Length: 129
Image (tube, rainbow, N blue to C red):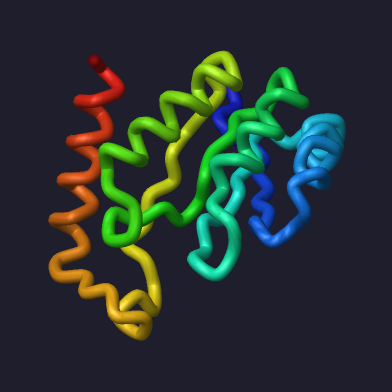
């Protein structure tokens, strides 16, 4: 029987870019299986910190946490994940959410479930070629 559990850790994207490679190496050395970088709107986008982490590590899966289809178009999501997957040699994943407090900043959400399903469909089709 295979143990399907994995250990993940997430970092905020509020750190200097030079911090992400050594932090990712530490995460990998400590035995974590996955590293997420949050995609909070108040901080830098996670794609560059994740790219730096990908170049510094060999084993851990890497991906953005809390990406939502209301502030990032699914075509852009697919491009970012495809790039990260190339840099990480197949270790990228995408963490999608409906988003929180977006209406407080003027972003109308509509039907979040429908938008998430549509985003997943678009991203999967684009990544499949």
